[in-house]
Figure (spheres, rainbow, N blue to C red):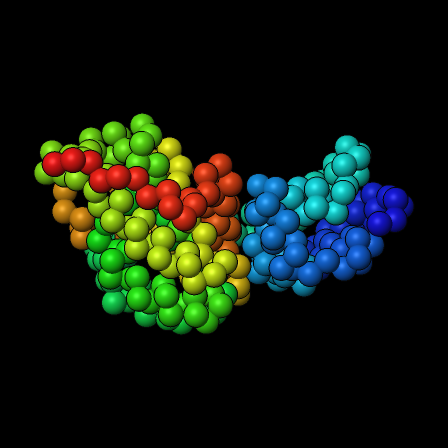
Length: 298
């Protein structure tokens, strides 16, 4: 990559399109890395860069988030403090202008507060989840505690997705960690730690069989109790979507508040939860074939 500074060019940037031109210039100097290569680098180095967000930033559809830009600069080996500041100053000018326009539009549209009933749903439709896995073209993410009621039902659909070369990432809690005790408290006395470990052990056994299908499935365990369950379908693509179900203390599973994010509609929030998953994924330990723990004695 050329060491020529882009600070002068960046100082005149006032629009999303202008910043996009600088991003294209930066990428061309660095060998025109593909979006998939950049996304893979970001996952490996805990610097998330969703392909679609990169594509939108490169084409001028919308500006990158501050973190996405910093991650892109790191990937392109831009480390000089003054050079990084020039990029961030250009981005800040665009975001300030964008924030004013958004505020004005919202004030014009706002007539009354929006009810939570228009945002949250009370549903856990396994048939819909299976259908979305069947439609996935690139990647599926499943993040939960034990996914006790989901893995057994979805097992066959995960196998079909793997046969189509869809990559699958499954992130669950460590059965031997403190997170399992926290989950037992949150689930309530009807469950208990032993029963939860048994359910997780069963699901790990099912996933272990799928690991034999090839390299498309990755399973990781982490000693962290997630605040929600997350399902993501093609999260790196333009038509990616996510469904999130908030955790709750006790209560009926099917009544947990659920909401859906669509990349085309919810770009910045979609990226936020993309980065949350990636950050936890990179701290988790890979699950290896043969690692299924013994089920607790009754």
